[in-house]
Image (cartoon, rainbow, N blue to C red):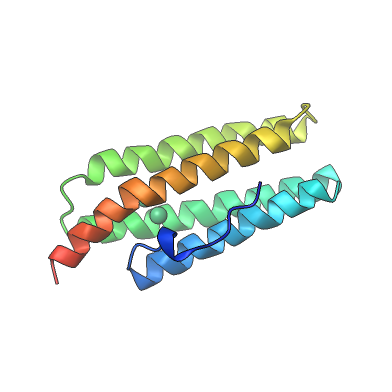
Length: 132
Ligand SMILES: [Fe+2]
Ligand SMILES: [Fe+2]
């Protein structure tokens, strides 16, 4: 399932929106790779690229939370690293050719990421806006 990037997903922070758009593009690419029945090695590479990108993005977002004294930073940070941990653990499913692994991972990633941006990241953006 592809997630089309839309204005609805924008939180109003240039840098974070650009990260989110890039991550959505990478997840869509992974989805296309699965649909085109590409080999597992290529899938694992693309998947690891997403994990790396998410790691960088989470770190960037957390720096912003700390520097802006965001009161919900702890909870938000925990949510990030929960996802990161889950996705890292799922790598073995792809590597071990588990049936339906790629579809399940994409569904999990799409749902989690969309919800997180729409709720948690938008809350952070509202806090940043209030500081201007
Ligand atoms: Fe976040
Ligand atoms: Fe984010």
